[in-house]
Length: 65
Image (tube, one colour):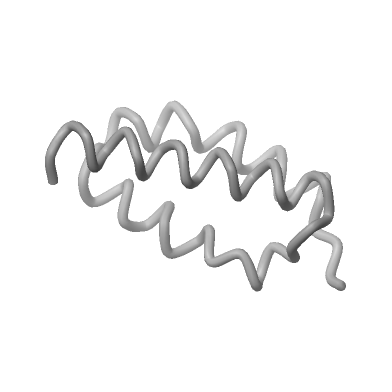
């Protein structure tokens, strides 16, 4: 995966996190789990950076529509 693709993946994950926080999409329907798994395979350091934010979001915004 190129640097550009990695930056795009991170942006996509952050956008989905915002959509979940604003309740535009449910956690399940967003597909964010698959994106996080892809990120973990490609860039472990960036994954570790985003993970605490992701866990906090899941704990606070796990609301199903």
